Image (tube, rainbow, N blue to C red; front, side):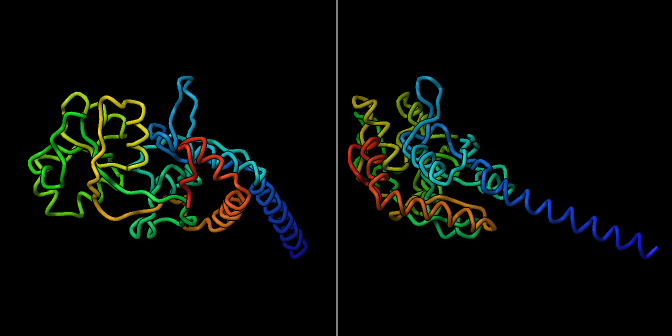
Amino acid sequence: MSLCIVSMLFLVAGCGQKQQATSSSSDKNSKIVVGLDDNYPPMGFRDENNNIVGFDVDLAKEAAKRLNRKVEFKPIDWSSKEAELKSGRVDVLWNGLDITEKRKENMLFSDPYMDNKQIVFVRKDSKIKTVADLKGKIIGTQSGSTGEVNINKDKALKDSLKEVKAYPDYIAAFMDLENGRIDAIVGDEITGRYYMSKHPDKFAARDIIIGKMTSFGIGFAKDNKKLRDEVQKVMNEMKKDGTMAKISKKWFGKDITK
């Protein structure tokens, strides 16, 4: 009987060692699954050939290349991004993700790599010039976005509005703005100005800042510090050798990274 037990112990120990080695190997060579909103130009969106492209997409591809890992871009419901990350369906959130104290409760962040703020976008013929002019108006924003959070935080502003409409993405919000279904949008300056540049005769930006200046960061699961540190290391290298600046100039015409 004791001989059988000893034999079983050796078998279990052997299986355990094999499993650990396999896991270590897969960690090194496995792909990184990036969760993103694929309708969020210029950070991550689909081009005319339905390929996912963008500033953050280029950053993620370069980081994965330097880590000798494959990368997969997985479109997700942005309002459920924390659940996607926590469940392990995605490894990182990399798509113009604002670093906030609330989000820090549910995920780890990289160092900030770009600043951002929430401003107001209107139609070209709009008479909205100040925050007071938003009173009684229908305002659009993206569901789960910093814009939505900032509106909800500002009780005086929210109470003054006729309605706040949350959209799955900013492209849908701009379409409704163009068609007169809403009066203005509160959204990311970077994304809004990029969309405006493609439709210069239809929209205008107002220097009405809703909430505080924020910074973009890469989000990781709370228990995935190893991946966070690996990605941060290559991000630092990309900043130092000018690769990040080169990618920024490609999408924004200048280096606007931190």
